[in-house]
Image (cartoon, rainbow, N blue to C red; front, side, top):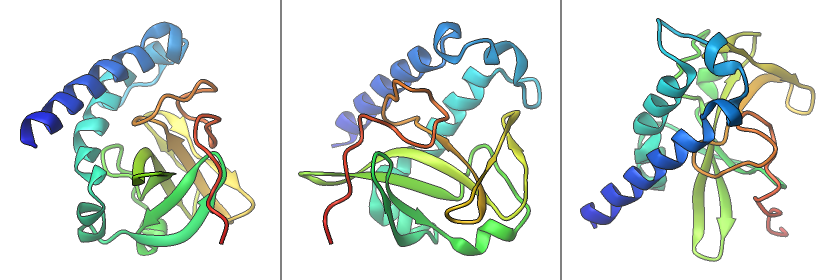
Length: 163
């Protein structure tokens, strides 16, 4: 199991390099720095820091709960709502983990920073989501998004199950 997890992490990190390659991220590689780190390096650190959340048990143990907020082409959101107003936007510890529904259960596909006030993460500004009345930013670090790494939705993620 540990070898499989390590192999999956290594494969995922190679995928990240493809996501964050200058052609995929555009010119953002040159312009978005946090403490001297390139966007690629920050995304690499983010993947390492959030890899444990492939386990829903680890997600729950971190204080994040199922918000019962599933969005088509996005997924199910797990977060600690108390962190939304804490004024902290940690590039390595996003407020929410986003999971897609699969035939084998929930699968981590993205992370999301959530705030009650405007802010930036890795030099990228959060945007206001009127539906939830919060400032947000997604990063599709665990599933390729052909429309962009920081888009809200991902056409490769399916629809939410009918209730």
